[in-house]
Length: 433
Image (cartoon, rainbow, N blue to C red; front, top):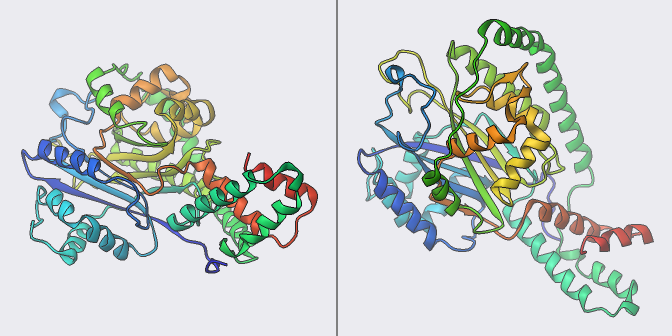
């Protein structure tokens, strides 16, 4: 057996936002693109996915601002975001050990970092610029990078041996193969499902309390928004074909893709929208943050999702005193962009409306859930318009999609069983089909 995984692994998130030296944006972007080409295959890290991308005055959308009140975005920022297992400091040190010279070159183009830094200086710098996410959703909680890769390899080995069997050898030799690999699987504590169910029940109870507590406020806010504020329709999103081509080049190079979308929180007043957004993210976090089915809003192709609200100390407003909150939606998913967004529209439009409607430029929403993303003709151009180029994105397992994670885990669970009846054995074999 592998080490007994009583607690399972805890996937974590880390994000940092640093200010780029004036005039170094293009050089930094080119450096990240070059680094992306050189980093091929797995780095043997406890990192599922990580990325670097830039926020500049040129790559975010400010259409909803009047020219007199547009924020001052002369300053540009580098965003680092990763999803990992285990200890953050150890993971960052291992990353620096492998990519130290590249990391030094990247951050030497940001204020406050010395090109002669060492690992300790890097840790101090990156931690001092950390930004905590407001929502972090994991598609397969408890499964570390190592476990995902091990279960992928296990499936391949068992599948290879099963494929070599003569039909007349079933089921005796197939059962022998199943038992043969028992010592290579991860064994979980016999009570982990019950413990996980209790944790999920607790989260659902917290979600219920939040809903009951804030439902009256939400209803009043929806009525205010619908009949008093009378929000107008957002400006139609025009397709920028140059932007579309740049974004498209980053996609479909492996079985997975990333999505990095920027938005600016609505105002009038900003504090009201900020707290409404925080409440909606809290409800989302407690209602769907730890399900073990691998589905978010019915979609089984998402590895990780997170929302970041960037504090005002990083992104400065212009001469206007009102605070401006910049929000980032980051996702790692399987398949094409088109199918991913279509799945959200078909299965999770209400959930999208509940969160994204807090952003400027979002299509008009009725009573918090209706309208908005229900129309693909308005939502898809909006996402493309606000999507930010991501010159560096790394996956720890480029050939494992979300459905593979779930299937491989089921194969491993089947191998662990002492005995199987005929029906269970047949279902286990179907996992290889």
